[in-house]
Image 1 (cartoon, rainbow, N blue to C red):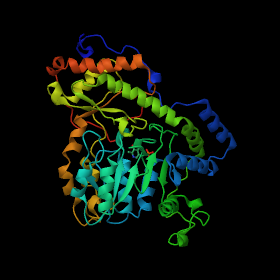
Image 2 (image 1 turned 60 degrees about the vertical axis):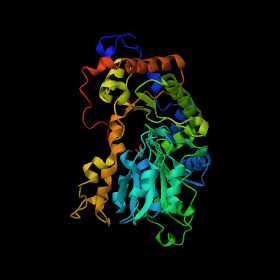
Image 3 (image 1 turned 90 degrees about the horizontal axis):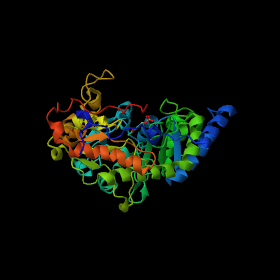
Image 4 (image 1 turned 180 degrees about the horizontal axis):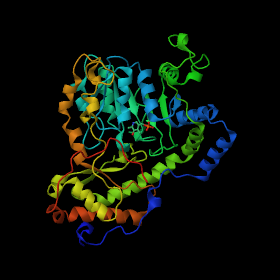
Length: 442
Ligand SMILES: *Cc1c(COP(=O)(O)O)cnc(C)c1O
């Protein structure tokens, strides 16, 4: 084995393959559709958006899809639609992007964190009953980094305790769990469609559901011009038509809607190519000490969707305790760009979840309407707290090109097999690994 590049040897990946990573892929059809909409001058209409919603609902296999300007707004609409309100507790994983649940504060509700599984990086159904209380209303499930959550386990607990379920599909559009589309297990799904995500339309979000009541409540919340009897049938909502119940405006820019319509036509094919590439990469690394794939066995009928923000799992015990920081530095030196330690930081460790008093209640916002101090429950999240030192970004290939992927795999193999050379000057992990949000790709 040749000398590690970090220690003066030659790098394994010596060329830049920008095209392998570029996303989204802008087809001539997308360009044409956006230009046409731009020239039509109807960006603030809803006709193209309604077409996009109908096509998205058909693709997702649900009755209703409601477009939003971003995933954050789709998810708070989903929370309101399920009736989440003052004093309600809502369970979510601590390892996720903030917009899976920070909106709860705006509804007077209380976020409660349950543990994450080390292999799937998704909510651990075995930890749910520990945190369920008399005021628990709902569970927010995140199919994190494209990996489907354990929906059998989660839905079983939800049914037993009569809890509503929101799926945050921002990382996993088009993915399957045991053959069934993600986003179709819970009462409602919300997701981001912003440019960094797998399903990318600029800025945008989508709410999907089979439940008419949920759809109408989401619509009444933030789609003022559709909050009228043409759309609303619910006797509870009828007296309130005309104004948006949330005091917010959730209309999507139609440039994004027409991009979404075109994206739908090519997305499944593009995502399948990504999965072929990523599975090839991890097949090449099977059995390499210190690293494990974050992926599913596709023979179970589950998939990694568009493999959003691809990550690997790190097992330092197999590499003499080598820090993930040093490991990533060594892989980077081999010519692999964008390999950093960690994923999202555990949300419960932020001051916003512990001490912040945002609304002058004289007590932390987290518990302002709560009947118990749910911050006590945060003390039992060891896996969530370990995840930053046991995960790292890997290349996120968009094309299945075997020779190039083999080169990248070789860089990882080289570092893992030569780990002893790295132990001597290992400074250890820098504190506070991980990020509140992932930096934009350049
Ligand atoms: C990106 C993201 C969101 C929010 O979507 P925006 O479109 O950025 O508002 C919500 N949840 C998760 C898990 C995300 O990654």
